[in-house]
Length: 610
Image (tube, rainbow, N blue to C red; front, side, top):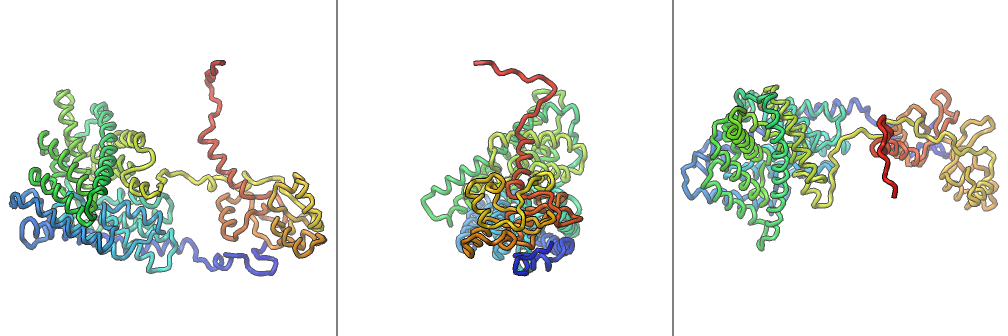
């Protein structure tokens, strides 16, 4: 049947639908754009890496060089305390007069753009975020480059989606492509980059997003390999994960990692609340946090900067237990104080450092208590590194894959999976509705749903949920008589907002709604007009084998509230009626499947009588 109204005009939205570009062509277009974004993000990651190296050399070694040098080799003495303060002052000014979006570690800001601003990020964020991060890290900030690169890559993707004519969903995909490319280009972990974007930004797993994500991530990684080498950012030697003999110790490590993840999130936002209570302008907060960082760094220089060399030392078991303990405590404190102050920098690398130190220390304690255990500190460091951040961010799968890509050792998979999911369960127990990524958004009144499940409307057909005995009227029924039946609460018509109209042959001839009845009575108070004359005769229909989601889309596109269900072979043969209540019934089936207990083979325990 034609999709037209009684005047012969196209129904609302039909012109746009007829001219719409095929979905397959749009995927191809977005994929080409994703390829360009991946290349650009790879170059930006390289540029930021070099910029951090430049600022580090200028501030700590007073030389012009972009080589990545560890700050722990500085010779500034007590003056080193002032270097982070300088960086904090600069970042404070940039956040105050440039954009407040540069504050933080970047991923929550990208999530907020997706959820509240239709994936639109301001152009200045793409410029100010990497510069502010390079200044903060280059002056000793205990951060990683990955968060700023993820946000910057996301901003580039968003800008491409704003320059071109795209839908909000396509713009979201492009933003996620930039973020995934940034992650991949930083750590040389393309698979983890893709999964991270899916878990934290897209909240979907569809071909329209997965294909562009893989393309962007692959090309960004290729740029990394060409400019920075084929290996990961920190090298891990051969590690003995001790499977299966070490499994009992991994079972103990899981809850510890979960509690550590909860502690990181709770402490971070507690300290952030303390900064909110300071009696001076927030412009000075980053410098205040940087002063505390400088004092900590004076005693423990390894907390300064990204610390990839220290992470490598931990993962390869090169550090003694006393130094691991100091690094774990000092890096945790430096990270929490600095990031809570509102400066700019990534959360991943510093969390990797202190959690890896915790894992290595755990193995050393285990070896002391059980000398025959022969636990590898490097193995437990790798596992703890992935499990803590996975549980804290509620992106467990991403960081299982991330740690695996870092080690390139298949033997790491079993302990990673076991410890990570136990840690995630502990984190869910203590933080059921938020994570370190979403707590900031939750405080702004935005609740983020991070669970993945198939839409119930895509798993049910119209034939399964439709009303099989639809309300039907002969075409010659008078409007006045129908109005009287409704007023008498005639059950055959009173409970429906619309009724189908049949011709003399019993075939579909139209549909009449309550609104049509009122308009007809306004025109003809006698009610002599027939329902055929008062109703709509050119209809939008659905079919029993269509998915409920497809039928619901028709209701939205054409701004209508119900659909006649007809045979495909004969669009005038009525088989049912689909209203809003029938669409909700599809979700009711899912609800029952999740919450209603069904009888099992075992007898149920009888409730004691009262």
